[in-house]
Image 1: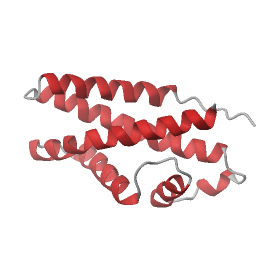
Image 2 (image 1 turned 90 degrees about the vertical axis):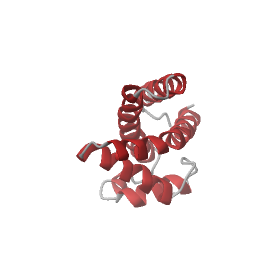
Image 3 (image 1 turned 135 degrees about the vertical axis):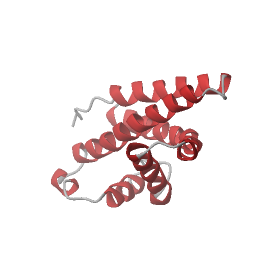
Length: 136
């Protein structure tokens, strides 16, 4: 059965996040670059979550089971299927960080969110690679 899922948006988001982190490594005192990393984390996180759900729906005998599934259960299912590198405890942190960035901006919170971005990038790459394997 061929799976119809375009993961190119996720691939582009990951590449964009990688480029921003690389640039930050060259100019680590530039708050605008740090903020760009945070923004790229935000949309990469959103795409990772959506692609995970879409892939699991596309490969499930009962795709409707994912409609009412909580985020926590979705992450647990993805982890059980080997699609995710990390478990719920880390994804909960990524989700919390994503929520922090959407509600307010302050310097301390920006530094806190930025600190998790490199770990999240590893997670996003892992998911991308598992999706590629599943689509091949």
